[in-house]
Structure formats: C-alpha cells, structure tokens
Image (cartoon, rainbow, N blue to C red; front, side):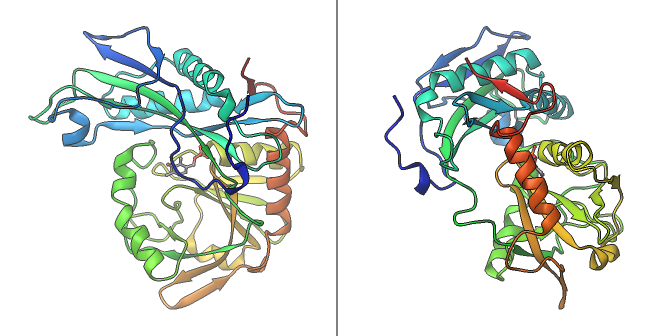
Length: 340
Ligand SMILES: *Cc1c(COP(=O)(O)O)cnc(C)c1O
C-alpha cells in the first residue's frame, strides 16, 4: 500500500523512510551488510569523517514508470563513480555488484514510498560511505561504513521549468589535480559560502571557471553545463576537475542517438558563451535546469532562449531523457534497472 503522502507538495528535503542498508568495513573486509530500521549512527568522537572529512556519496532516483514498474536509472554508473571516488580518498571501494544489491534492497523494502507515475515526485537514494574509526594523526581511517537511505522528493520544478540566472563566481570549486572530479562532501563544504553569497545577491547558482586561468567554463556547485550552439550542436565542457555527471553523459547520448545532433565534449572558453543559443544545468535532481542569464561582474549575457521557458533543443533533450526514464520511450540497452 502506498504511503499516505501528498506527493505533489513534497519539496527536496529529508523524510525518514522505514529501511536503509548498512555494511561495515572492519579487519580489512566488508561484512555481509543488511537492511535496518535504525536511522542513527553511533561512532567515535574522533572518527575519520568528523576530523578530516573522509566521506564520499552518490545520488540517484527510483520511480514508477508509465506501465507501473519500479525502476532506477543507470545505477551501475553510480556504483562505478562511487568506487572511483573512494579510491581517490584512500577508502576501501564498495564492490559495484553489492552497491546495486543495496539499491535494489532499499527500494524494494521502501516500495510504499516510491511515488506514483505522473506525480512528478521520485524516491531519492543516497548511498554514502565514511571513515568511522579514530583518526587524529593525518591518515586514512581503518574502519568504514557504507549506508544507503531513501527519501521521497517532490517535483524539482513546480509549475514548469523556469530559466534561472547564474553568476560567474570569484571563488573556486576545485583545484587543478584536486578532487573536483569525485563526489566528495568536501567539495560541497567549500562551496557553501559561495552559494549562500550568490543567493543573497539574487542569483540562483554559481558558474565556476577553471581555477588556473579563469578562462574556461567548469560547472556549478552540483550540476554540469550543457550548451546548444545557434546551429544546434551540443557542446559540453571538458576538464579534469569537472564531476562526470551521469545525466550529462546520458543527455549527450540522447542528443546523438535519438535527436541526431552533433555533440562536442571539449574545453569551452567563457568568451564563447555569448555566441551560444541555449544553456542548461544537468544533474539527477532536475535533469536539466535552463539558464536564461549569466551575470559576469557587471555585464550580463542573455541567452537567446530567454527567461520565459526552456530553449527548443533543451526541451527536446529533457523530454527525450525523461521519456526514457519514465518508460514512455524505449531505453538504450542497460539504462533501466527494474526493481522486483
Ligand atoms: C552529483 C553532481 C553532478 C550531477 O551528476 P549526476 O550524476 O548527473 O547527478 C554534477 N556536479 C557535481 C559537482 C556533482 O556533485
């Protein structure tokens, strides 16, 4: 039986669901792991995560398709990315097949909290792992915990996707050869001041430029850029310090295979943006948020797509990817994982 929630009025917040998955790494190996109803974590005051931020995470969604199946979208890529994030922070990677098993178990156990088709709401899944044993001299922890919980979230855009206004940030998100390419909480901690400041000044997001030269476009705090040229080519920035968004990679496939568009994944100069027709931010939460205006130190770049609605190509990309996710369009092999 479906949980008695008002799906349409959910926001993007935490709502406790009955079951989560936990596995512990101890004495050099991961234990068998299990579902639990216990949402509390008890650990040492000196745990590695608390002292030196040794933690990585992922984000993905489960939802109901048009024909009533409960599915997740490309969870194998989340498993792979979390594996790589863990390696970069000297954490024991959680095996990929066990990551998928944890996703399946948590969604199945909380299936009453998977929002119905058409509600716009989804069940957001948050896998993460952290150093749980004591660390005071700087080194990796010995013990770790992997957790995966689920929380229902509302439609990202209530009443349609309105273009947003972003600004070029004077802060940096990631250093060259740093940790920008992994999904680590530390990248978010350092972006909090910049986003609070952006909001206080009336902007929705920060555009970060490459920290070394401040001439190339990187990404925002939590979403990759996708641009559309005036002759309808897709351009996405390439850099070693950008987090490889699964949504962005999927949209690029969709652009080529479903829409017949040309895709260029290459370094993008900030100076090129004034010549683009459309701009969007991609990530799991919103799929694509259209950007209407980019503010750069007193100068405004207004994208021709305008401030009223998504640009034409952005809309096609959005409709096609969400169509694939929701089972209205046939998905490429391996993109949809059904939860039994
Ligand atoms: C999670 C994240 C994204 C979006 O990735 P998706 O896999 O599409 O959800 C983009 N940038 C950063 C910095 C992120 O942490």
